[in-house]
Length: 213
Ligand code: HCB
Image (cartoon, rainbow, N blue to C red; front, side, top):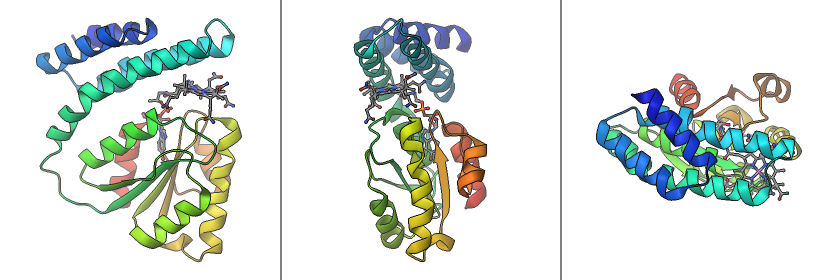
């Protein structure tokens, strides 16, 4: 069942077992289970557990790296399947997304980008460690519906405020909706800095970008 496959995927990420993750994802695709649930409730759940144990000091950075490699191996198997499912989607407009300056965490941002593509948006992915000025330039160049930033650390989350400020200074804040996300980011934070959209996960990002389109 879906729950069993999700649990197996979670356990394999926590075991840092790339090959097992790949096999489970391939089997899941063959069995026709929900790939989005597998990413969010399986692989991501395992990754979050490793993050918690890292925070508690029971796991160390090499474990986090190994777990993120295992998760990425699974995402690599599932991405083409997701893309094929969204092949018919029409162009609903452009969304620019990137991980904020000083922050190299890219797994979650990549998943959001993939899901938005599947939902029919044209996605411009600025990558990670993206300078604030680059977001502003991208708004001018691509005229997106939404500009999304991802921040995984409390230290880099604060820079999402600078995106708001610099878009205002450049006179383009009103031309675009801003979206913020990443593990430490909350609706309260979005309200505080004046971001238009807070997305808790990739599914939420799709729902809220659809509403903005
Ligand atoms: Co990293 N790391 N890390 N890390 N890392 C965190 C983020 C900590 C919370 C771990 C901890 O202490 N508990 C912590 C940050 C503490 C803080 O807040 N200050 C931390 C730290 C400290 C660090 C380093 C500084 C460690 C060091 O070097 N000493 C270093 C950072 C270097 C830097 O960025 N300058 C570092 C490095 C790494 C890697 C490289 C080992 C690896 C990243 C690999 C990669 O991304 N290519 C890594 C990882 C994997 C994590 C944890 C374990 C998981 C992150 C992850 O991928 N989650 C994380 C702990 C945690 O978050 N629980 C830990 C899975 C994805 C799917 O979830 O939340 O990213 P997500 O994305 C969701 C959601 O938030 C939303 O949708 C996504 C999909 O559903 N979303 C958006 C995300 N972005 C969005 C943008 C939008 O616009 C909308 C929605």
